Image 1: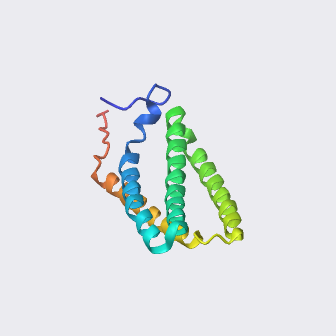
Image 2: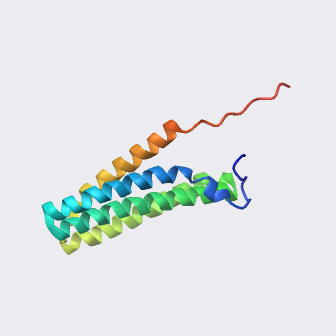
Image 3: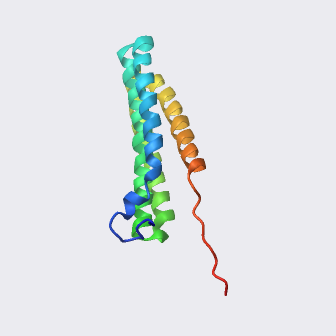
Length: 143
């Protein structure tokens, strides 16, 4: 059975199967890193680690769902929606991080380390999923 085509019910969901493994990997990271940060750096460090992991997960989810939506509506929208989503996320991230940095919050460095770790974990899990997934094939008809 093939995935629903653009415009059909379930088209967005059919384009998001890759999310399961990265989400599980980031959940595992959080289960290990947040308690470790609590022991090593206290409640502020644990909050920073949790915030960093959550920020990465939300960022990648927004990107994935927006591109899946664009592909499900009209595949010609993928590039423009993806670029607008990316630019908007980067601007918002910069504004939020600048605002947090001006507060002098002690968990900022822990948050930064967690962001780096979560990006590596998400990317590795996504790559693992991609390498293990069967590639779609297309047979040319003999003309």
